[in-house]
Image (cartoon, rainbow, N blue to C red; front, top):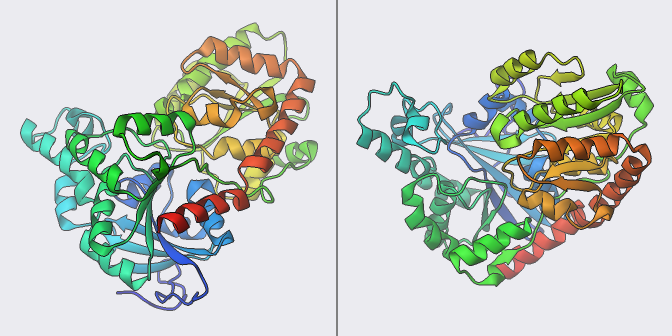
Length: 457
């Protein structure tokens, strides 16, 4: 086992961290586990390595939670499962100072996952592809069991003890890793919690039987979206006291407006254009990027020589297909920066350069990207996914407009309304900033997490 003391590894950028918990005055140590099977499934899609993750990746719900927990005296250890390591490795997330424990995937999982094109596909055909030579029953069995083999429970148990963890918090309750952690938590007498970040409901039939048991056995669920909390209560029939209406936090000191003209000059953006921004993963269906392009085409058809720019920042698994869609449209008013931007100062500058933020998602958990935009003084036009209805569904004073999902006409009309009324745009932008300050700060969410962990532990 690698336990070198914060010395740079042979791989550039990786640093090893001490395993011992030296923060004796802390309230406890929370083990954070991401959803999905192996970390490469996430990193490969956005073109990043484990080096990049340790050195540069910040923000999002994960590091927001880490900051919020730290603000109220809780320590975090991040557990990752990787198919690239052969033995447990202890690393350091440099920007936050958080310890990372990387566990090797089980050989059984690697065997079952062999040949999978998309481990998270809804059907066996989506998982293995049309040309798979496996028999239908073999494909079905592998698809069902893979999420449960993806967590090496024995190694996880030993390293939870080694790190002195007093609670387990998983990213999603609608995935096999949550079920496995609940089982492990019962064996180790550790409370298990989970958050809602937009996980798909029930990837397989096995989950229909296992999930209700795990949900009822969990100590608590942090659900920021009101309608999702209501769904869980109705569907699983659990004690309402187990659900905590905790949203994702954002560092409002870091995410704040910069001078718009200066930001545009430094980024080479036109000074007098009306700029609409989207940033995040290039996941066409889930993020509704096809809908955004259709809406933008309508806006361009109706624009009366307006100087407009749609700025899209991000990368992901659908980058090649998205490029094809952009080339087919051939609209010079769309600019795509095809990279996953990890520098928060640069991203803050992009957001500060914009007039309006748009999130046309079909499916989301509780996204942090629009909160970042709102903190930078941008109004938001968002689809009526559960989280956006919670964030800006409280009237015009919340800082944005809500439109029906998959309604490109309504999306185009909302964008045009704000672009055509600069004063309303600025007014909603100021309201957006106040909304974030009042409801989504690190300190506010930290107090809520502390109450959940303290009462539930």
